[in-house]
Image (cartoon, rainbow, N blue to C red; front, side, top):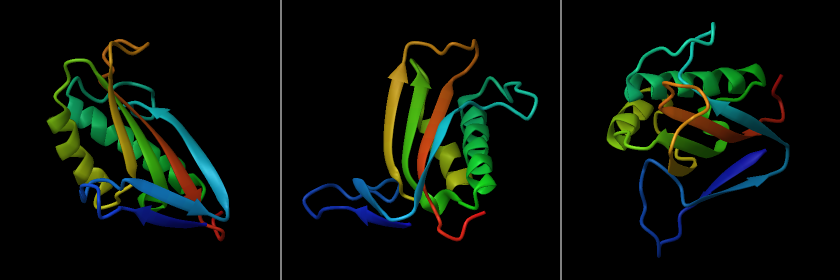
Length: 132
């Protein structure tokens, strides 16, 4: 499976995301929304930055299960609690995710079903053909 990042010259280029990602061949992994929870399902912190890092680590764990990593992600959907400081989330995201510019959508939501959750992250990934 191949990912081609689409960044038309007529649109703003940002190293944090791609305007589009073309996925060809292979299989697609849909990663359900991940919160900043540990292996016991407990929130790791009340801090958005820490929850963001853990949510991304959880996405990476699902990817690794099928032999994929952040470079195989075509799209991330990020949902932030209303009033959350998106800047803190962005800074923390780079620490875990690195320079893997998936197509990204960030939305604010009024609340989550679970009290204390500040961020939820979902992903679509192109699974490598030689993956486990």
